[in-house]
Length: 98
Image 1 (cartoon, helix red, strand yellow):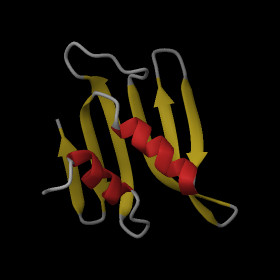
Image 2 (cartoon, helix red, strand yellow; image 1 turned 45 degrees about the horizontal axis):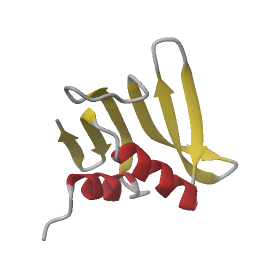
Image 3 (cartoon, one colour; image 1 turned 90 degrees about the horizontal axis):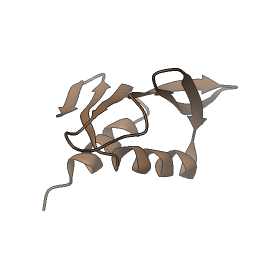
Image 4 (cartoon, helix red, strand yellow; image 1 turned 120 degrees about the vertical axis):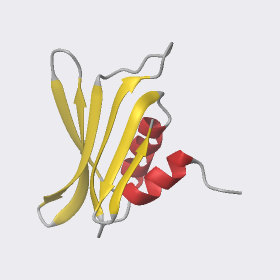
C-alpha cells in the first residue's frame, strides 16, 4: 500500500540534506484552518538544526522553532489540518498537493 500524501510530505520535510521550505495555505472548501498560511523552513541556531514554523493570520506573524520529537508532533498536527494547498520544496524538486 502506498504512503499517504501526508507521510510523503513529512518524509521530504524531515530530510536534512535536501529540504528547502514548505508552505501550507487556505482551507479546503467548507473547512477552516487556524491560520491563513504556514511556512516551514530550516534554520541553524547555535549550530543545531531546527525547523522554523511561521504562522500567519490577518494581523500577526508568529515564528516557532522545533527539533526532535516536538518537531515531529508539530509537523503531524500541521499535516492533519485541512489546508487546500501544501507545497514542499527540496533540492530535488517541488511536491505539491492541492
